[in-house]
Length: 200
Image (cartoon, rainbow, N blue to C red; front, side):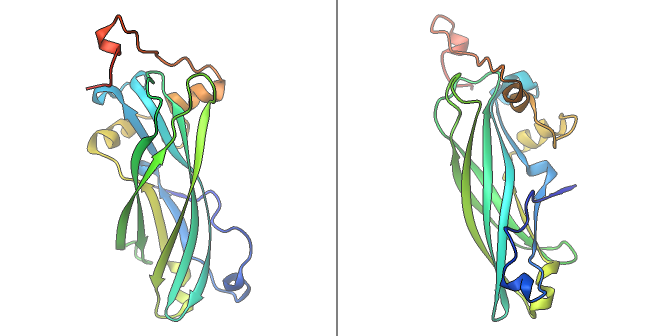
């Protein structure tokens, strides 16, 4: 299942004025959420950090046999119930281009560091990541039939964790806590070896 970008275009541009459509920005539902979980658990109580792609904005320009998409991707992170981290979390996300038959024409992965909200100070942290995608086209009229898919590059364990959600489109354990403003992160206790270091 796919989720369309929350905001596909940032206003009318030259391509739209010429009657040309931009490629659609799409977020695959199963790749919209990144959870860093303690000990590969499937229990939401073991989430250390949860990140989501919370918005996309973009526009396009047409040139000779190509359409260029300029996209701004918004990532938002929440502390999880089991959070102990105070540093940025390195994650990977992918950008793939598909044609009108949903065949993947190319795919690339990128690294981004998402800041973790500070302990009991901010409920969430948001960053913007700009990217440019050039798509070869035989004619400008076919540009609107392409899709630019953006999502987190997840491990099999993270994909399995996402399957346990009732609905991946709604905030999970960490996001729900942030929305209620009742975050109570687990602070490592130096007297307890099980909480004094990173998860194994």
